[in-house]
Image 1 (tube, rainbow, N blue to C red):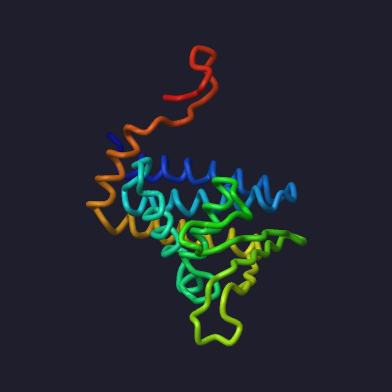
Image 2 (cartoon, rainbow, N blue to C red):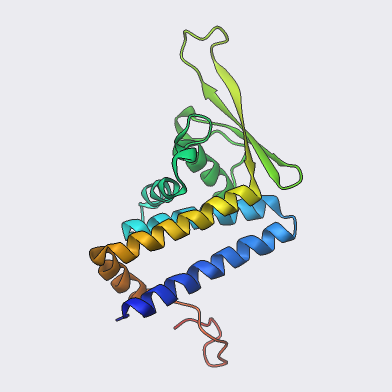
Length: 192
């Protein structure tokens, strides 16, 4: 089992690996790949917070808890957890731009100088003059989004430091999770 110091070191190592991959994609100009990494990191942060890392059928719960860590900016109508969840599903499951279940959205995604735009076609209530589906355009400025993820990580680490129950559960979860270790010719997958 981990001591608190070992737990923080292991969490920081795991998060540093993920942030490192995101920064590599960003520096290479691979905007969409960078955004995929950001969406996965949001879910991982939420998984740490809920202690549901790797539990099948809990992806949306993990993701929305991760979005909550991003702060109030991501609770507004123009960019919220449901919209980000739909974008995450489109990116991760590679069905951009297909119809997402319950007619929630169809995405068109494009980038321009580290800014990603996506249109989500939503059904408006009948009292709107246009009726039917109309596009709602949202912009994600990738470097700002990464900054928000760094703040979310810091907020989560503070929650962990102040919550002994969460620390204990997380310690047990991470103890059993396969982890990458130094290169070893006897262990080609580098799993502990």
